[in-house]
Amino acid sequence: MNLIRQVLGTVAGPVMEVIDQAVTDKDQAARLKAELQRRLIDQQDAGLEARMKVVLAEASGESWLQRNWRPILMLVIVAIVANNYLLAPYLGAMFGVGLHLELPEPLWNLMTLGVGGYIAGRSGEKIAGTLKGRRGTFLDEADTR
Image (tube, rainbow, N blue to C red; front, side, top):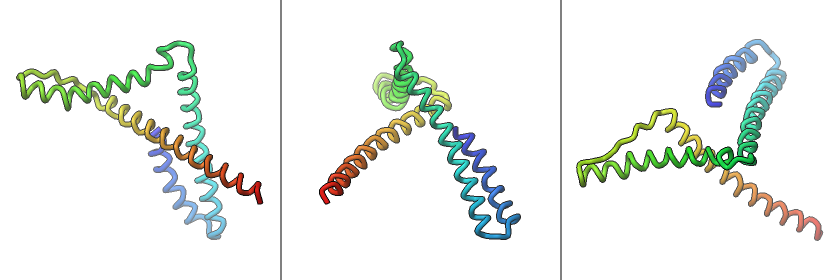
């Protein structure tokens, strides 16, 4: 997804410049740019929705492993990081023995993405709950008027 964003960003900038150069009517140019941005956002939303459907299908699957492989993978990566930066250095300092496990960069990136996704998801849930509570309060006040 990050590669797609980079490609879209790389393509969108020059296209916006072409619109500025080719379209003399500033209002028309602004409308074209807005339409292009809307379509880019729609494409991003479609990609996110497709990924969401995959995750939801896994989460509601019949197999325990199907539902839990992502959290297990995240826990394994966290265990490797904890070993490499907490356990192994202390064992090495105290006993001269410490096992350092290799963590390839793609796994590190996966962990940071997973943690970021979890934080964003939890934040979104809390914000949605807050907005829902405010909306309900607002609607209740509007009904009493």
